[in-house]
Length: 195
Image 1 (cartoon, rainbow, N blue to C red):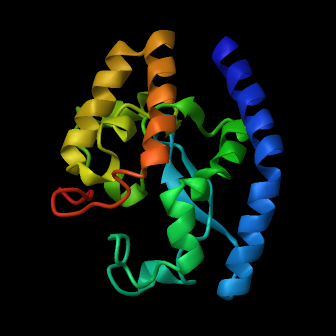
Image 2: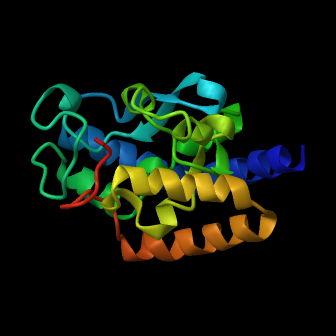
């Protein structure tokens, strides 16, 4: 109950403070490329329940069906100039706060995954679905997308077994540092999610 109250307050404050940034970002997206500035993608949440994650669009419309599909590298030509900046500052994830308000997500937890990823989970890896997905998590602050998918899952499972208020506060603090550095945004040579 307390965790949910913290989520609601933090998401409300975050959206209020971030509203001007969101407005400018949405305007920049629309001015650079056609299409809606908000991007929705089906993800899998706690106990395997599907929901639509809300993000700012950073790629050309229809990017999932062209080029490398769901895989995204740093030099991906589908990423717009505005999208490059939004990704670098992790501002594309700011609308995830709406998911937190709706109760689909929480502040700290494993990042929400695609249905096709969940289909590849082993029984052990399905343990990742025992908690709500988060805006940030243990895997996020320990390498993010640059890590191999199986390693990220293990980090998330470790978090689930050891989660505490102190660990959540540590993750939130490390998230701020990670966003400022902009590290681990792309899969590189060893990252990605295909097992």
